[in-house]
Image (cartoon, rainbow, N blue to C red; front, side):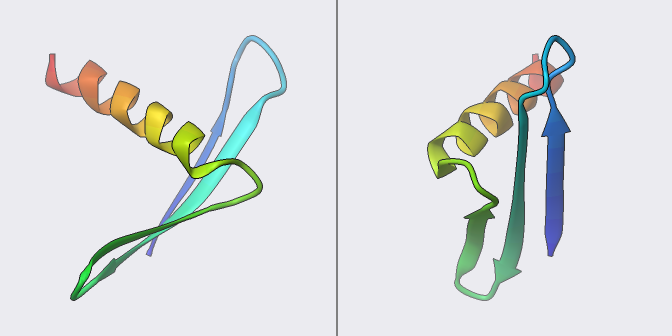
Length: 51
């Protein structure tokens, strides 16, 4: 399991999620935020590290 916790520096917005790696693929379980919000964060983070 991978746990993700993030806090925006400019305010108090937080997001969290757990990701399980299973034999059938990844399973995302956001914590009190919509899954799409977590995915936007992950896509933006991945873009920063791949550019």
